[in-house]
Image (cartoon, rainbow, N blue to C red; front, side, top):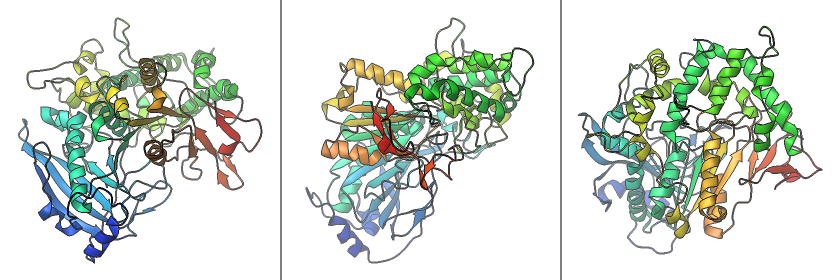
Amino acid sequence: MHAPISARLIPVAGAVALLFVASCANYQSNASTVPVECTQLASNFIASTTNGNVRLTATESVPAGLTVPGMAGPLPMPAHCKVSGKMNERTGADGKPYAIGFEMRLPVAWSGRFLLQANGGADGVVPPAVGNVSSAATTNALMQGFAVLSSDAGHTAESGPVVGLVGGNLFGMDPQARLDYGYQANGALAPMAKKLISSHYGQPPKTSYMMGCSNGGRHAMVAASRYADQFDGLIAGNPGFNLPKAAVQHAWDIQSFSAVNPDVKAAFPPADMKLLADAVLDKCDALDGLVDGMVNNLAACQKAFDVKALQCTAGKTAQCLSAPQVIALQKVFAGPVNSKGEQLYADWPWDAGVGASQIGFGSWRSWKLQGPIAGLPIIGVLGGGSLAYTFTTPPKPVAGNPPALIKSLMEYNFDIDAPKIFATHETFKESSVQFMTPPDASALRQLQAKGGKLMVYHGTSDPVFSFNDTRNWYEALDRNHAGKADSFARLFPVPGMNHCQGGPATEQFDMLTAMVNWVEKGQAPDQVIATALTGVNPDVPANWVSNGKPRTRPLCPYPKQVRYKGSGDINDAASFACQ
């Protein structure tokens, strides 16, 4: 559910053969085929995938200097070969055309590495295959010499009353499109991409990686379970690995907030959410030994903070919350239950990022209360379409306008409708929980046995997928590996960060370099340095700057927490350690 960047490529003619010869100079070992230059790939490439159904639709040689948008400014791309194609073209059970659309970018200065870029939301488009290392980073995988593949996960988002909402979920009417979206597209793409790399460079990749955030993080965790043989390292950001269950939470949120005010965005004005965030900081900021505007001891915070302390004793004022508001927050943060009290998804942590309110910046408010589309929360309109078309079996179509989607969530029955994410049908033979979630996620024996690595990061103020759900997964993984899961898998909480970006957080970091060092050099990531996007992220406090430099902090592998060493600049990562 994380929006991809967009970019426009400029076709160019040039000395392709010379560029190609230069590309091979960077990685020459294990040459297996005769190299094929960029413009000849479409006519020369023969993919020997499982079904061989691959068609390259376009190739072009792109010169150095093209820029793509980055949160901190435009990112300059190196010279590369861009390839577009389709795989497994077919007519669906709904009579519509389907294919796994993909794009590959093969850099002239190739490092010998391959990255499958896992994309977010409901997929349905092929974003530029540049491989963002995080949503806020100032570099990407293509810039680092990776051959990068991006795809639409087997379907094309259709135009409709709300493009990308219901239109993005209509593929749920086709059973194979559901499976491709869940896992099968990536299973087919990875070996095909390696064949394409071998055709172009004359040799296969020496190492293979996968990386994504949100639904892209889910893709990476699913691949760690289903396709461990295809990857050496996988990075999963804010992973929605229990996405159908999280979508049930969306209905729970809408119903809880609507009990305060039928106009959801008015249930908690920004000032009230800031009041809540300030109260969390008041109780929790110092629990890690330093008052710095961040909650680093998240576990202690859950015991110290009680939202009931904010309840007004008389009428509603700017200094307190009404009783209905407190009840709604208690319900939302406790997570959804049915009439028997059975938990349907995880609970959520109290954290300072709940006050993030910049609309359109991935903030807590945008997702939960007031999004940029008709003022309605993003999870309301996305959750309505996803639940109806993709996660409910059989699908339950709804009207495509945002009010109708919100209405469908308001009418969602947690006794009758919630079990349908586990249901199968004569046409839809796998439930959404089966095709969306990683099987046996808390074991990952195949990944461990082959020496593969998994890095997961998750913003502790994520409003879409609960950090607690990811923490619970990692604790189960660690138990199943006798307390040694960190030998191949590590979880990095990002204090204050919202959904893949935003919030009062140090949100610019490069997990990919850390992963490469772990896989290729045996250097396990004991910390990853992160930087605050001052001047870019409006939720970053102005005082997170020293000597003109933005705050940096170590991100620590769970269960370690960042601790101040007792002296030094509190905006400098060197003053902190993971303990």
